[in-house]
Image (cartoon, rainbow over all chains, first blue to last red; front, side, top):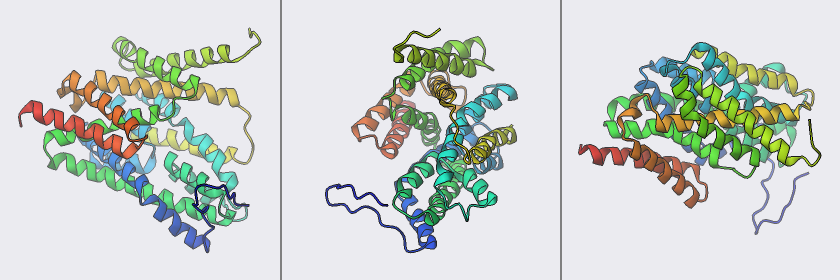
Length: 253
Length: 103
């Protein structure tokens, strides 16, 4: 079942000894670069919460309940920019859409017999891009009954780490000199930028990013409450249409 | 507001749970929404760098742009290492602000 791809002498990861060991394995794997990146960006989010004059409780609630950083940053920034609740909800709705395909692609890998509704919903709640990527990468090498514990292991470390870092960022923002706080707040948009440029190979993707970027300032100046949404929908739709027309050989109506 | 955002976010996770029992063939819808998402995020980042309304508004525009470009350059130079790039971008902005203020 495991793929023994020859990779310069590195043996493929072996299955764990037990589901419990798989859980610990997930924890260990997450405690390296993944949690550091998560912590760094969530320190930024905590600072943003403070700088936006929201309470630390609000920040923690956001991280615990709506855990997906780009959506969280967008909700806070739109809120302080004076956007209406409707605009914020729609923006968050669209931004966090990717959570659904992640869940759809991950749950079928799990052991059917032990996957109760409660476990599935909990797993869905703590899924984030990093957790998803780690679990998908590991899943092919371990038997199904170990996959969910692994997900819990790395997912919980990242989820709790993000919440703690939210508090940490909030506290830090009050303790450190202004330049440090500004640096942390800057991490928020910058982290999203890094996510965007990480993989620009697909034409639809870089076109969408380009158009969204170009429309951003004009749309926001024209209508602060709906600007981002308009820039996103218009730019994204344009990229989608252009990509489809250039990609297909037969003319379409 | 946060409750609304949380509900909306979880709605997607929940939908995923429901759908994971059946294969969804809506490829084109996914692609369109994916495009819109990337466009929204790009618009968000550009707006935050060029027209910040929060604390970053106190930072001069060339500094914001410079720190962004520097961080992106570090990202590529460090073989797409997210952690190093995030640290470099934040540090660049913080240091530049510090020097320019003469604090």
